[in-house]
Each structure stands twice: as structure tokens, then as C-alpha cells.
Amino acid sequence: MKIILNQDVVNLGEEGDVVVVKDGYARNYLLPTGAAVLYNKTNAAIFASRAAQIEKRKAEKRALSASLKEKLDATVVNLVVTAGESGKLFGSITAAMVQEALSKQGIEVERKKIEVATHAIKMVGTYSVVVHLYENEVSHVKLVVESEAMVKERKAKEAKEKAEAEAKAKAEAEAAEKAAAEAAAAEEAVAEEAAPAEEAQTSEEN
Image (cartoon, rainbow, N blue to C red; front, side, top):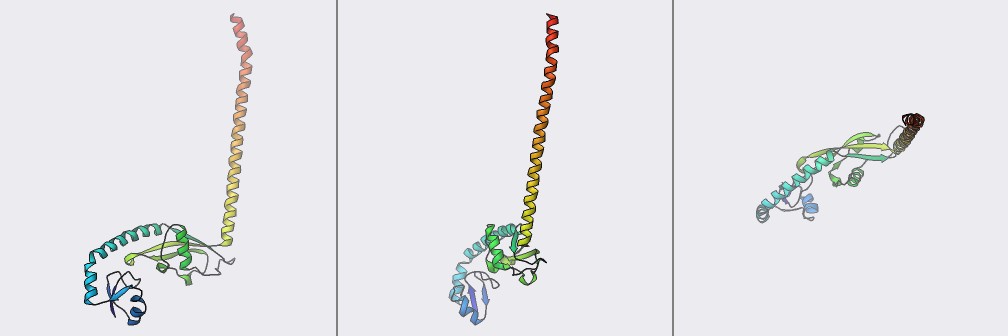
């Protein structure tokens, strides 16, 4: 069946595109949902009159896509999951999990545009997730999968290092304070020793 897309449809086309699809797909989904209309002279003329508006929206989508790609390329998604001692995951990494993690970082992406190689992610480690953007543009987002045990161990290590650093800083501050006090005491002692001599010299001069 020949149709005109009324909106962008993933893996099919963009608003205003004329495409041919299976009758069932058109009747059961595209036409009832308003995602497309039948191709005929009347509808073709309507879309022709909207060509400038459609092209403007495409330009806006390109700009938004470029901005989103820049953010995604610089983003690291960290997921903490349950895993065995060997690092083998007990569950699967899904697009929904990645979408939620991105959302927490203030980046909104449709779940259907996130491609996760679930079958290939079986162990903790670093992977790449593909996010499909506008006009076949894609972003490769860095995905770090860690186990709960790994995170707990890392936090304990960080806490220990922080405590040691604070203790060292405190010891250095106390040592500096002590050294300053000793220096001040030494200066005072020198001054006290010099005072009688100065008084004697003054008496002789008088």
C-alpha cells in the first residue's frame, strides 16, 4: 500500500515521505494511529503545500540531533548490577536501564532508539551502546557495568584513602603549628637574653 507519512517513523521514513508498506502494517498501525495517510492526489497536494513547514521542522531536528549527539558522545553510563564473584551477570542489561540512567543525567532519549547488545553483555566491564539519532546519525555511549560488590569495595577504598588523607593533613597542620610555636618561643628567648645586655649598655652610656 502506498502511503504518506504524517510523522517520522523509525526504520521507515520521515514526515512527508511517500513509502510503500504491507497492507496489514498500514491498516493495523500506521493509518489508525495517524502516523500516515493514504497516498492520493488530494493528500499529495496537502503535503506539497506543507513542504516548507516540513523542511523547517527537519532543520530543527538536525540541530537538536547534533546537540544531543555531542552530549551523548561525552556521556558515561554507569550501571550497578548483581553479579557473581567471577563477574558474570545474573541479569540482563536492557535499553530501559540505559534510558533511565541517561534520564538521571538529564538526557532524554526514546527507548526504541537505544540499541543494547544484550546478548554480548554477560560480564562486568566496559561496553558501547548505540543511540540512533536523526537521519541515520548515531552516537556511541560508553557503558560501564559494575557489580554491587565492586562498588562496595571501591567506596570502602575511597573512604579509607580519604580518611588517610585527612589524617595526614591534620598531622602536617599540627606539625606546622608546633614548629611555629617553637620558633616563636626561640625568638622570645633570644629577646629575653638580649634585654639585660641592652640595659647595661644604656647604663654605661648614661
